[in-house]
Length: 317
Image 1: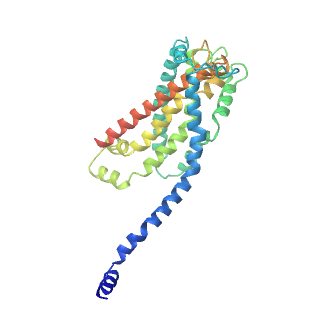
Image 2 (image 1 turned 90 degrees about the vertical axis):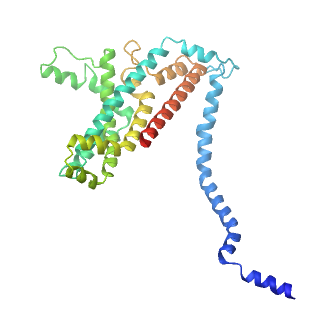
Image 3 (image 1 turned 60 degrees about the vertical axis):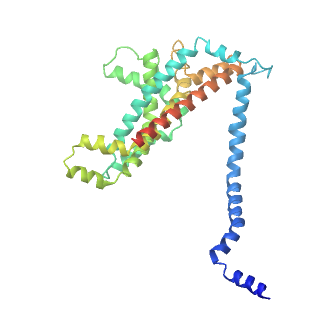
């Protein structure tokens, strides 16, 4: 009898937190199950539409795989050696890197300038924000077709306008030389995406507290000092996002060159993705196209990792 009374007393002295601790595992398991259920559709989507195609591309890159004949067996590493020995491989890489550098510098500089111009809430600022962003609503293929018509030396209006102003005597071929084709395409991309990157930078600018600017002005800092010491450091996350998107998109450029130049003149504007397209659908060799795709993926992963590492070091310093 005393033993039972002692057990009952011990049970009565069990605190409420201890009882909650006893009943918490089932509730925690229920939350975990719900979380897994919510994440399952995304996991299935990624597995079906990314991981499985990636594995298939890896298999293709190691196999003799004509487009119309199917898998003929492993031939590694012949696809990788064949694609690197191609006469267009290194010129395509050089051109893609040159295009990426030019577009990134020009596009981010212009987008930052536009964001600074419409940063303050003043009359007409909303109108100009909308106007700058409007080209971004147009698809890249549609924009490329539009500019292909504008650049046409026979039917396009740009050449006629220049002739009417007396700036040129003959019709201008905007896509007729390697240099003009490059810069004409750069102009298209800057026109289309400047407003999109302006919007990202504008959001970053509006997150900077006004008190910081007011304190700097009270200390006698000039506009250049404020921009260099306050705006750029606090805008670094937005600039990092723009840099990542711009570099990745430029390295994967395809639509604009395929529509405007078809890789010409004289294969001077062939990008890496265009080379993949040629290997797969003109030379009908999925093996070499997959090998080049794997190389591009590895380069992008390495480049993005280096960007993240550099930005992390900059934030820690």
